[in-house]
Length: 575
Image 1: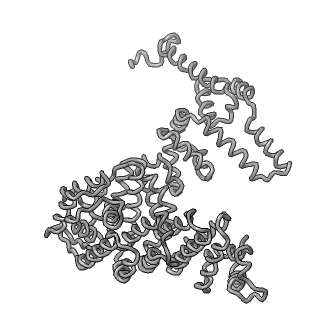
Image 2: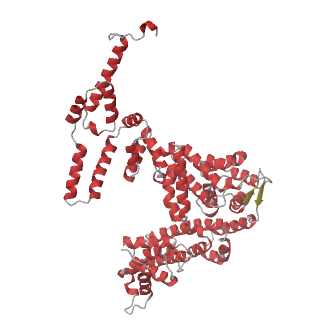
Image 3: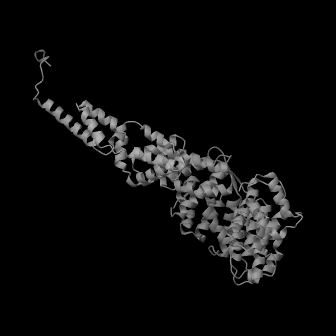
């Protein structure tokens, strides 16, 4: 600027002044429009609006006029109605729930993600009201629902991250938005895995896996990321086997949902270094059927001096194909010329262990391979050779000996399930306890990990109608099944069995004499001390007069009365 122009007044009619005046008029008009809306004085943006309005010369009188004329006091009216409801006798918490639930419904109905993003952007920082909302579970639940419905809303994505930062990641396992943010997803993954590992029971695992698997299988990248993390964790000696089990459960869930994840599983197990083995396994899994060609190639590879990793054979669905083929009639019919190859591969997967060192060096332990192969071969010959019950009874010692091998026990369990599921099976039985149910007892005695599968089979048997059998024969058969459940309890499977019988009692759809028989058998094998969980489940059955009335005497000198007295004396019973 030249010296001659220094200090000169600007021409009021210059284009620059005209632009400034036009801009100021637009700002005033915009602010007046906002302040003319209903109850605008209650809006969070009121302060920024007033600041803009006064900066361009807005009149205070106009502000007072607009805000007062458009003030309808909705919030204050709600507060007044709430006070009246409390005065009429409703509890303050009940009134608060009514108001909050209605507000929650309105927000779900009228939420506009674009407006939410605009408000969020205009604030320039995390709004204080948002931080206050996420401190309350009810409003966090609202954000979870909104995030599911509007996954592209920036404000909701940021809110989910805030909730995770605040330590509530355990609540957001089913939120798809969490799966799009690595930091949030990693926290949720860590929390879920810790919860499952700390629970330490089969029941807790089955309870937690479905929701966890649903989150992991939200997208291919979340599935891959989770499986890579778990593959690394599975190498740890402490808890590594449990992590591998969780990984397999997630793989199973993914397959049930129609996702082909075999290539990911094989890649994590090192299959890319063994393309021929990978191709054979994927070919059979894709068709859910074994074939002699691929089995022959795998047999040749695993009998070589440098076999592929044993983990490639240990895919649960792949092992299931071999077990079905060798122990039941459901699987692929095996050509006798190739039978030894099927047996070898199943035995190899079940018995061989590998210890890896730095680099590619491995120590392969095959000490149990031959014995396992022989056990599979013997039992395959017995169960698939068309032998009758008398012939099987003569080989009961061989069956009991071979059942000690977990893979054989699994196969025998599958075979027993197929046999006893035949509606005519029990019509032909003369023995009080059929051979196949005796084999279940031996499996239970030898293999804790098969307890749940045996219980599942026994429950299915117990709930079958057996309409072709005489009523008394039906009752005796069901008592025999209950005896197997009592044996399960004696081997440590206590709460699952008791929980099922308690469920039958509560439903009142089971013959009382059967429950009475169960109670009598259980009282014969138990003694103090009892856990509180056991007492909580079993005592209501014992106290049921229609079940145990005939088992008591007037002197109280009986097992039922002794159990009740012990529980009343040592436990605080909550009704």
